[in-house]
Length: 290
Image (cartoon, rainbow, N blue to C red; front, side, top):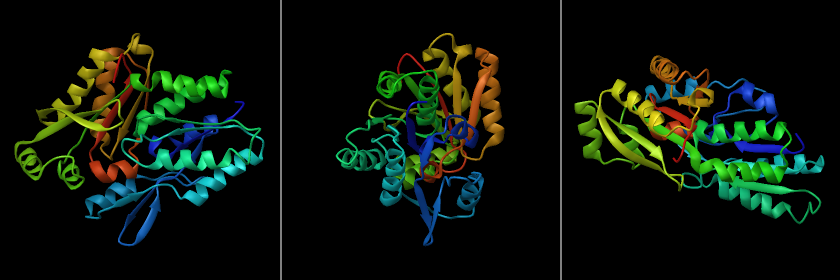
C-alpha cells in the first residue's frame, strides 16, 4: 500500500483485520464514575465484553472523541515518515469525531506541502464504517492510489446498508432516541425496533415488530430486498453487543438464505454501545441503496 489508512475505533475492525492491512486506529473514549476507558489500545488485545458486563451491572457511560493531541501526534508521525494519509471517519451525523480529525488534518497541510492528506466522511458507524474501511484497504492493497481509494469510499458509502435492532429500549430512551412511553410500552409488549442509518449518517427507526427473533428476521428480509447481487459473494459484517446466541442465529440465517460464506463479526464499539445497550445487533452489507 502506497499510503496509510487511518480510521477510528468506531469502525469495530477486529485485531486481525487491523493487522492484515496495517490500518491505524484512533481510539474514542468512554467514561463512568470518573474513570476513563479506550475501546482500542494499540498493541493490546481488544476486550470489549467487559464493557457490556459493566453496563449490566448498572454502570452508565458517557462518551468522548479521540484525544486531539494524540491524534495530532499519530498523523504527524506518519507524515514525518514520508507517508501520505487517508482518514476514513465515523459518521458526522452521530459524532464530532470526523470534523475534529478533518480540522487537525487541515492544520497539517501547510507543514507537509509535499504530502497528500485526504479525509472522507463515511456517514457510517460500527462495522458499517468498518466494512467501508476494510474494502477500501483491499482496493488500496491491489494498487489503487490514495485519490482513487478516497473516491471509491465516496462512490460506495451510500450503498452500505446498516440495519440495527436492540434488546432493551431503555438505552435508546436514555439517549433521547425514543420516548419514555415508547420505551415502557415496548418493554411491556416485547416490541423491538428495526432501525437503519440514512444518507445523513443518522439512526432512523423504520419499523417495530413483536419479539426478538422477528426483529432479526426483518433485518435479513431487508438484506434480501436490497443487497447487490451476487449476494453470496459479498463480505458481510455484523456488530453485536454481547449477544452471541442471537448473533449466531443471524449468521446462520444469512448463510441459509443467501449462501454467504464471508461473514465477519465483532463486539460493538462501546461509544455506540453506550447508547444502544447490551443485546444490540447490527447487520452491514452492500446494497442498491441504504
